[in-house]
Image (cartoon, rainbow, N blue to C red):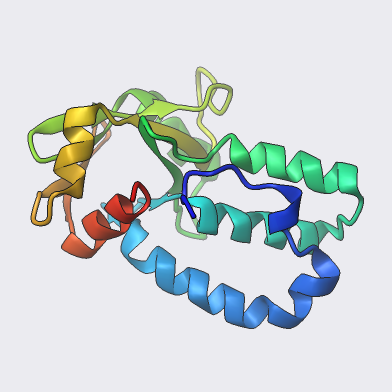
Length: 194
């Protein structure tokens, strides 16, 4: 089963059936997410999404909001399917993690323009992220951002090749960090395309 295939209502348990299996499912998703979660500096983390991580988010949202109607479930599926990676891209959720005592407005204001400064390196291939529109204003950004990295065929081949170095870079004037990604991250991302 392709991890790029859209989620359908048949894939979703819903609150009544999900509740009894939630702890086990959650544990398995946390294990899956471990190599897919990347810390970039002290304020930004990024989770690469796939069909499993997005199914988990749908189930959690349905549970939290007690959504049980077919129309409500279909709406949540549509929202999260829009975040699904595809044959030509990787997708991720970026979180700006602020200390509890931080002035969120001021700190998020410092990162305006972040959407032009996130790059995934796959070997020599620099893939600049395309952010979901509407999550920033002229003076501040949302603490949660959805983004997509284009994946041209040559970069996809590099991703599939064991040992290809990966790095995530933020080159924003107020936040400059670069982190090398583990081989386990490369392998997990490559597995999505098998």
